[in-house]
Image 1 (cartoon, rainbow, N blue to C red):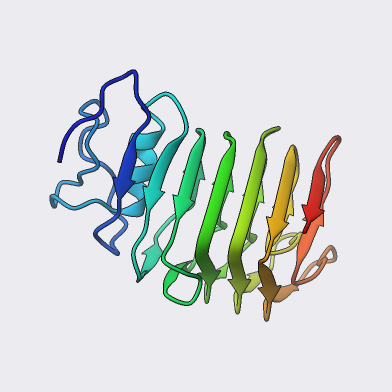
Image 2: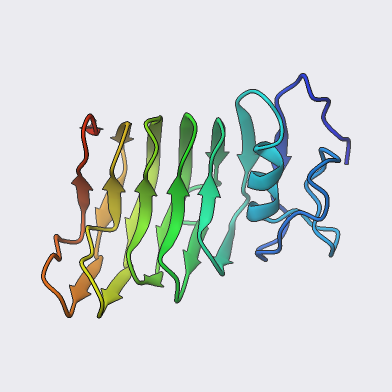
Length: 193
């Protein structure tokens, strides 16, 4: 694996379905302590490199163990929504966009069981989801409201040639909004094409 210089954007390929973090954020190499490149390690390394970086995910199912924070300009490319799947169980959000822009293509956020949402965009950035499936997820909380599987709280999100289907949202409290997308917050915008 060749390290990336501080002046160029990075291109990382995930080769493990695990969720371990990167072992050394200063070396420019996506590598966990187990000497593999996980989605989490690739996203962490990409945040250290200026420019719009690329993370490629082959056909696999990745089970996250905590929220994956996406806070830098990033393109994530899967091998198709039927073969590249990101899932998780028992925490608040699967993925949180807090910086960008983000450009996601050809994977699914599916079969997760979480307490608040699958994808939330909380920063005034832009994101584009193309051929992304958000499907068959279960959201439940007994302590507060749930917005929806996909929540755009700030910035602009564009969803193209994608599907959001088969999601279940329940709460012991009021404030359950549904199994699709909610747009809230000043200046938040959603385009579906």
